[in-house]
Image (cartoon, rainbow, N blue to C red; front, side, top):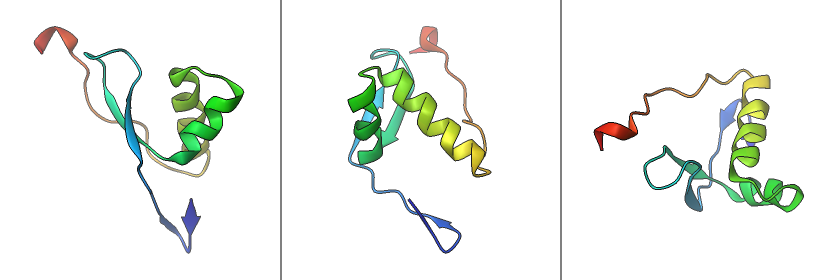
Length: 69
């Protein structure tokens, strides 16, 4: 949700797209709306990220090293 140039995030829960060792994402209710079309968590994360990137948001940042956990 965007208003007056600022991004508002109403996080409801978190999602782990690659299991318990995968990265964790805070997701909003839009995540679950996307999952009505396709149940895949990865699909919903990708489409949400694509939407954000089309509006000029930065790419995901961080590293994922499951072997270090």
